[in-house]
Length: 110
Image (cartoon, rainbow, N blue to C red; front, side):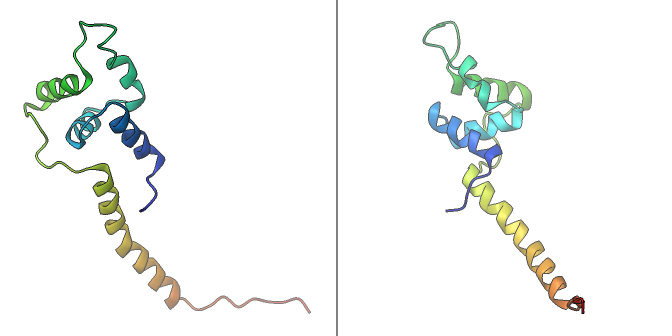
């Protein structure tokens, strides 16, 4: 398994900690929410007037975008794989261009 970048690892941790689905995480990311602040939003047991975090994210998403769920739901792991697939041709082109360049001549002092 590939290493998850730190900026996406916080989303993976939030998904596990707050028991959110991939769709809810994607909605929160599209809304520009900060996963480090979910603790303030999720304490509906102490403050009973608060809506549970998953329903809160869904209601904000519906209010902003007018849709119940995103058109295409992509998990964080799948998005990382997609980014790697996009980077691979670039790496190959870079590697080929480096091979086509002549090797630098090293001058050794006499």
